[in-house]
Image (cartoon, rainbow, N blue to C red):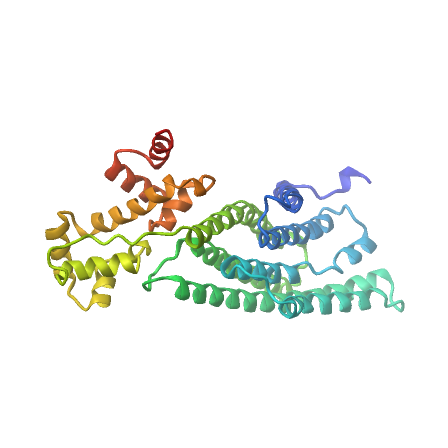
Length: 375
């Protein structure tokens, strides 16, 4: 192989760095059988198929492979597997159960069909290599176009599944659910990449420009996507599992503040908030509480201010902090992250949890946990 004849540039270097990183990351996850979560295998497969797809075109673009190997490489349509395995990842991520075999086969079926058709074109012995390449270029554009449609359909179904999960798991309807927000952002980026991919294909056909360089922006975007899916996805997966275990394992005691008049309005408000654990909803506000209780926002605020001597936000945050303190002092949750405990207590971010905890205890959650355990 003559290195001088290779098409190596800064774009190729960026692309191959993402490919190498993605492949290494995937195999590291596969080898961690004890530490890895079951559904994270699908995350590893998503990263792997993204990497192999980019590697496929990188080898062709750099001219490392000859025409015959080019045909062989493009026979495997990795792009038809990326969204199906990511759908299975999200399915396991939000539902915490395995997908049925029928669903898996249905998602993989388009890949098998396209792969089979590519093989049929390969064994067409009546044409030479150059003719095969010409035929394959045309069919490849058609398959790419169909692949875009297929990926967009799966993205839409995945977004619907996430929204269904949010509605069924939020105590009071809210605008943001922290543990799935990153998934929706990622899927929206996926839609954007599909749009760029479609525009690029149309441009190449209209201008009869089939050079690989016009696909550089899309391949580089995929390289950055590999990093994001890998690290953010793994971190969020572990965080979600911790939060679900906190919900399932921790036996919270309902503590109702005693009042001289058990029928007082404040007692009814407090009972509603605590018994139904409304404070665990990160988006609880006076408007949502007003709709639940059938009382005006001003009246609820006045009742809380008068009886608790703090405003509504501080009252709710204090309940959340008490919940977090119970978890931090429980040795059953030694291995859980501070962030997961904060989110499960009703805060929408690690920073807001730390700020509120410091305000009510004059300590950070880490300091509090350490002091309590040393008693």
